[in-house]
Length: 156
Ligand SMILES: [Zn+2]
Image 1 (spheres, rainbow, N blue to C red):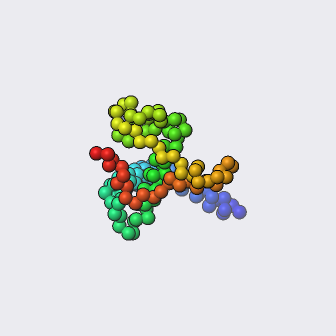
Image 2: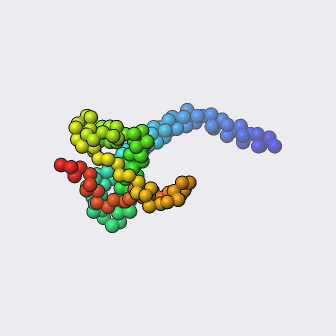
Image 3: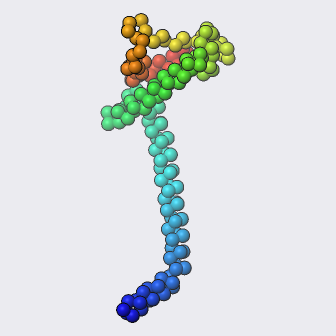
């Protein structure tokens, strides 16, 4: 019995001797871990820039191995644009393709830059579908994965 207490006592005093050392060591480890996290963050940011660069350069002609990811970005970009224009339409606004200004949908020309405003395409479903009243499952026909997005900035 007393042996056990002796052992515990020895262990505790051993621990006591090295507490300062261990604290110092823990501090050093924490600093090194912080440097690792900082470097990992730097890698992530660089990967992000590389990815953006690759996307901007090769989005129309990606390598086969990465095409799925590139197309996923394109699809998400298209979806965001679509959703944003839906929000604008709900507010009775349309976005100028030239300057990005938000103009009343009834205007023909942009109030900021004077460019002709592109009217939002009317939803094609309304004419064709007769029993349209309470259909919940409307497929979104405007969300399309555009493989060559050369329709942007074609005005000039
Ligand atoms: Zn404009």
